[in-house]
Image 1 (cartoon, one colour):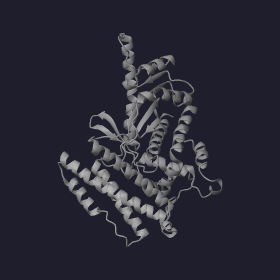
Image 2 (cartoon, one colour):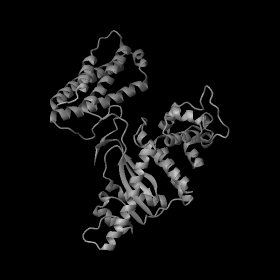
Image 3 (cartoon, helix red, strand yellow):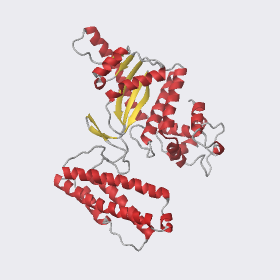
Image 4 (cartoon, helix red, strand yellow):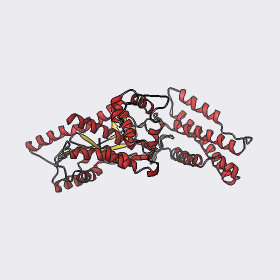
Length: 415
């Protein structure tokens, strides 16, 4: 573990005068790594920490810390640190691990394999009624909260009981006909529109009201409400378009009110035609997986081929001798570019080819399968089966951590 390098990066996120109160990088990052390896929550990993002296040593403690009434850190600090450090720090964590592998000559950069996968986010399977009901329930609670701040005696009608009844009746039906679905969607759409209008009016009253009223709603609470309101309005607009135009999809469609960044990504695989989560573009170098790109929006991985290999050159100071990828990367442009750079590919030959070429391509394709194994290993053993982190850039943080930890464990077995 490159603790010294990571500690310098970690400390740059904090004010020097307050460094005495800041928990050490090795402790915080060590706990996060333990979470990935042991598949434990923030609370559980702290319990394990106080029971295991070896894990404490890995986290930077030289004397065994016995559990008292207070744990060494509060479990909530792990979530706060992920939020503060963000995607940038964990990308550097991955880079520092690869640097160590280079310095010790554990990694051989001659052959790379490229592929993409989708990691599902931990949300229920979405539908239009569920989506609008989530936005409606949030708006009802927020309307009542703001109403009580302005004047508890004000009468408001949110029709929350009516909305709840409509939603439950819909959910109870085992077989839902198109007629029932359309009817329920329109009813939920009307209720959501009513609540959005009411909420906007109440927020306007707070802005134009006295200072005493405006002070009762904290600044961060107001910002959070306005942000959620924008999401609810976007959902309403998208649903209105689908209802009016009688279509089933729109661009940048929101499928979760709680996780609005999640998008439906069509994969066309058996049993999983559509997946809901970020798409990862990964490079396998000598068995070590490196995250090249992560995006909530679908992208064509073939267009990432040249950028990925250029990044490989920056990282290892030379182009790979062989690149392995599936047919989606085999565009004329990529073939021509690889030939110019002197990179051998496993792309199927265009036109007729001799037996020797066919045999060589077959051998290379067998080597390409290693990256598929990486995806299976990451999803089964390194907590990348589902994105569970809810902080900003949680998908990126979890992905960089998972790949970094897998690389460290592979390196440990090779040394």
